[in-house]
Length: 175
Image 1: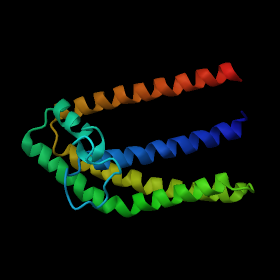
Image 2: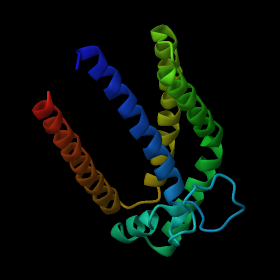
Image 3: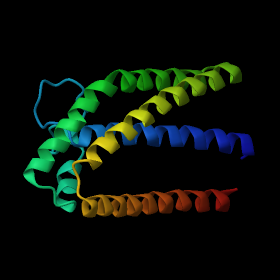
Image 4: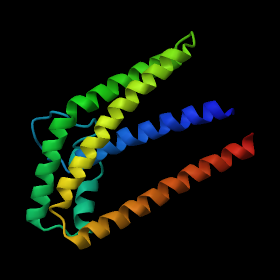
């Protein structure tokens, strides 16, 4: 596999991970019922928030959020979910367009690169929104809860790194 292809594959993977994280984090705290706007496809199957396996409930429990804190965080996520909905829809649309370009019968490298730039710009806008959300949520948490959250995030990152490394080991054996 050449270096350019590996770099492009990494960019596409990181973009997908960032988009997924945005959707999961924004929706994990969202309401359990609601009017159906912005729902995930799997919502309601297991009773968890937005169909993400009760991740929001587990996180609230792991951080030992009070009922008041939980309600405040839920309100923050709902507010930001509504504000980021147009960007998330744009990201989905841009990713679909990229997929069409990649799967096209005729390779148009310039168009693919241009589409990736659009995705990166939208992802940047979403990252700024996530940072704002994060800042706002931290105002609700105690310093100890913030430490716990960061430790949980570090463990998650280590699991992801482990999966990424296992994938690379398999590639090097097969090459």
